[in-house]
Structure formats: C-alpha cells, structure tokens
Length: 138
Image (cartoon, rainbow, N blue to C red; front, side, top):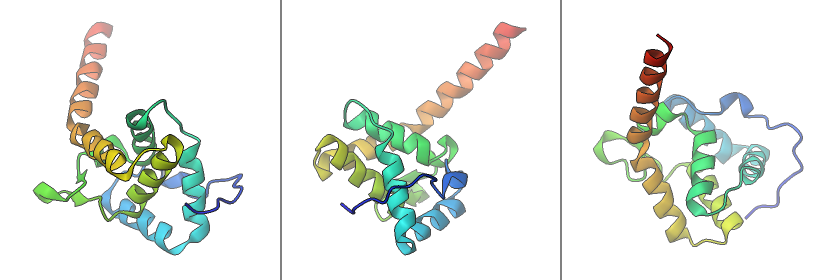
C-alpha cells in the first residue's frame, strides 16, 4: 500500500461517479500515470468505510461507478462486458478494502464480483421504486 498524501481537494471529483466506459478508461489511465491522483483516489476511498467487506465494496463501487455503468462491467469481461480484473480503479478499490478490513485478496475480489453480478437487480429495483412513487403521487 502506498503512502498517502494529505489531500484537501480530490482532483477527480468531477469524474465520480464514472458514467461511461470511455470515462472509466480515462480515469484508469490517470491512476496509472499520475501518482498523486491515485493516492488521492485511494485516500478518498478509505473515507467511505463500512462494517464488513461487502458493505465497504458496496460503498466504494457506488461512489466510483454509476449504476448504469455497473451493468456494463464485470470481473472477467464475460458476455461482452468490460473486464475489471485489469482495471486500475478496481485495483484501488480492492487494495483499500483489504487494508480497511484486513481481508484477503480472494475474499475481497469475490465480494467485488458478487456486487457487480447483482447490478441489474439494483437497476430493476430503482425503476420499480420510481414507478411506485409516480403512481403514489398521482
């Protein structure tokens, strides 16, 4: 784990949550090429917290990737989706989760995969809630 700088302003706040594959690729390239950017992103992730590995992953993924983008990504790239196992932002999420929860890489990656597998369920739930709210207000 890197030594973090004290960051008062997270320079990539305008990126988050990431809303498209193009923006994800750009964000990942910034993490690979700008040391301070990566350190500030990881410092930001560590502020999100959670009570267990899954809740930390949920918080970090929700803050980093828009729900619609989550439907286009998975760990392996299976089904024509964007592969996250090689993503720099996913690596930061994995590292920060392992650090904050003293969890293993295997456990952390499994929770990351699990969370992404259920993104379509979260989208359907959000749509259903929106439809119910519209019906209730009519």
